[in-house]
Image 1 (tube, rainbow, N blue to C red):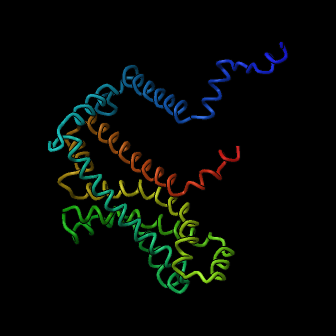
Image 2 (image 1 turned 135 degrees about the vertical axis):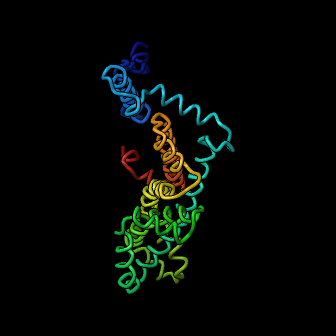
Image 3 (image 1 turned 180 degrees about the horizontal axis):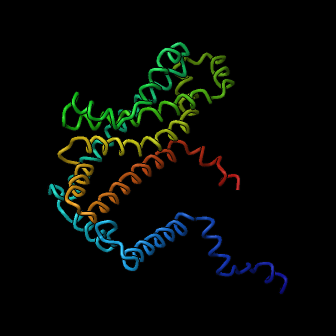
Length: 285
């Protein structure tokens, strides 16, 4: 009887061991918030005790007030964050989808046909090497001061990482599977949809993760050059009027939007590349 009770009893884990296990399992919910709190504490200490003027580094409280004031405005208020944020998000998403779509198609085409790669890839690399900040004014002149120029800059920045990763993904597919499908009289389209595309998706999503951030940067660069609306335009207005706390508030909004776009891509990757998650280190553990 006593042996049965001893065998059925589970060992009680002490709270330090439980905390260490939680940190190892979910560092995003433990270590990352702790780092943010330490940064905010250091920021508050520097502004209150080191004599740093607010026009150089405003206190966190002033930045928070500016952030709340910008967020509490209506979506049609031209001085609020919702209106300008909507413009920037629209430009970023359009540029992201256009540039990424062209990048995937072009990357697969260049990896499929070696002759096309030899002809076109040098020009793509040369164009990518050009500084986009220098190209932005020219693109604005060509396509006007509307949304078209910003979308184009965002698409250009999103194009190259997706192109490179799509080529790498296409070439990483095991040729044994392709030969086996050909021996079963599979068509080229069936081979692409059933073997090449699924095998390339992890590489494609790696490029999309990078492109989601670059798309936002492209839209901001275009708004810096010339724009009547957008977070980049609002950021320039605050800088010119020396309103530093609202500048930090806009930067926080940009960081949140960029992170949200990256999270959306990661969620899509988990849905369409679930086998990669299952075959990773967590599955082995």
